[in-house]
Length: 502
Ligand code: XMP
Image (cartoon, rainbow, N blue to C red):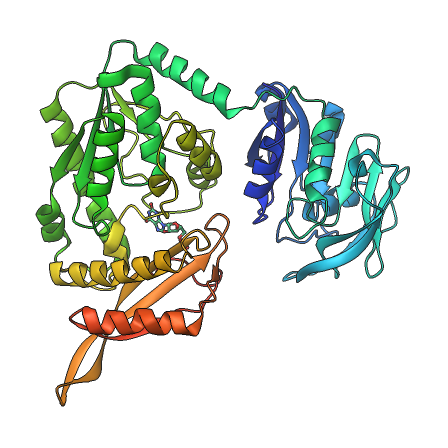
């Protein structure tokens, strides 16, 4: 399959870029920045390369190669965006002035209509860029293809090499989608990335690999495992066995929703393994979040394995791993327990969704008939409510948190805000503060509300609620949830804070 590779220099917009290329029907993938010419050749059918943006600055005093310059020998289109543009400019002798902690904003730029990258783009547009970076000199044989009043040259091209000092993949850049489509066309790819074909191919592939064997799959309540289950079910029917482990750490009514949907709508039986008490007893006395994660993960594996033994012989384990999960672990990013089950669990693992982004999984889910309630579920961490209770996890605290969270969720749904907010939840802080009840001073818990907008969970902004809305939620929580007398709203962005508290 023809593909366009994005070399990842750490831009927060890389997943958007990946998605936008795929929306043009061309498969794209993110690879680490150090990827060599040979590695690109081994992938076969790479028809274009993008050097992404990123937070670094080019250090011209060190003369260090920031990309394998032999990539230029591949004679395929190469596009550098922001940091990537500066890397190319540096290679071709330009002087780069850039600063760390740049501020990005919208700026008016003028583009050269003769450049194929700007086909169907008006001459004057608004682009999302920093006005502090400057590229000048060098670049012999290159043409300036875009300029801005404050930064001078913001785009250059020569043959199949292009550089842009702004982000075409960000919605704030006018006609950015058109520029991406033009680049994809320049790469001359056969556009055969299509999710209907993906579904058909995966079903065929699963049938072939699994044969008459059986597959076990853990449903988590989230969209990824649900979509994976539907794909397996289409391929192998009752040779798929689904298990839902009730850890006691799920949100209110989680397993009824999952069970109801799967059994009623798809006739897929879900085996429920109710081990809430076991998880709680293992978590007793533990306050360290990483310890909580370890204990939950270990217990989950133990319970899942035992359940699998009870249900018969399984050669395969189905997992709803996504492209992002793989990238995070390969890039050495998070130490988080993402899926719960390790690779050496004793089954052969099949991960049919591992090429897909979250957005694509949702589309595949819709195509397979999954209902919107599951498709639009918010991301929920594998360790569940245990990492939303600061300090020791107890049954009473879990109940308090579930109730408070359910009030928040109901109010958000009632106000029609659930599609606007990426993730929203309550946290039971470890702060007990004084309040007054029947003229007596009494110490009760403080609940923090977290609600963020985000594209991908990597960066996030707090949601700017109307104050009356917050008033309503806080009043309901303190009135209806016994044990809570204070509610606070968290107004920090990620970074520097994170979405979860632990
Ligand atoms: P942070 O807190 O790092 O979260 O801003 C980013 C996204 O990851 C989710 N998250 C987790 N997911 N296991 C998971 O499966 C974990 O341990 C974990 N910690 C955070 C979080 O909910 C958000 O969507």
